[in-house]
Image (cartoon, rainbow, N blue to C red):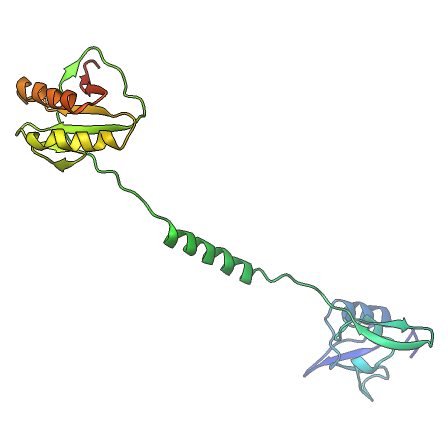
Length: 210
């Protein structure tokens, strides 16, 4: 076909005005012309598929995977090798992360520390108890006595402290007495602790001030 020939494009029932080969190639490159559209180069007398016109074929988008020829060995044999695109699938990796999170959530343990509410007496002096091996003795306002949050009678306190001292190198007893507890009860507890052999006795108070 000559470059000076005008071409007529027909798409379904629509027929376009004659255009030059250059314009028709532009339409093909812009995907405005498909390989199934009909082209006439003789004023509409005969029609040919656009995909079968040699002047237009190079301008159509490739419909098949790109093929390259690779020479193998010394014999000169040629084989066709399909170009592949490697894509990393992230879905298995995301699933693995979720499984690890579930595993750690199920195997983790959480300890809830129980705190006993008491109204401690206030004092202007005092110092913060350092971390050491200690036992805590609570004396509530109703005169109930608890050793490490376990109820205990004062007559049994000496035996409990003595057993603890035998299994340790040193014991500090922290007495937390309610402000309304009679002073004699606190003194009695201190005397029992001294008799049992407690190394140090501390009485906790609430610091007075803003």
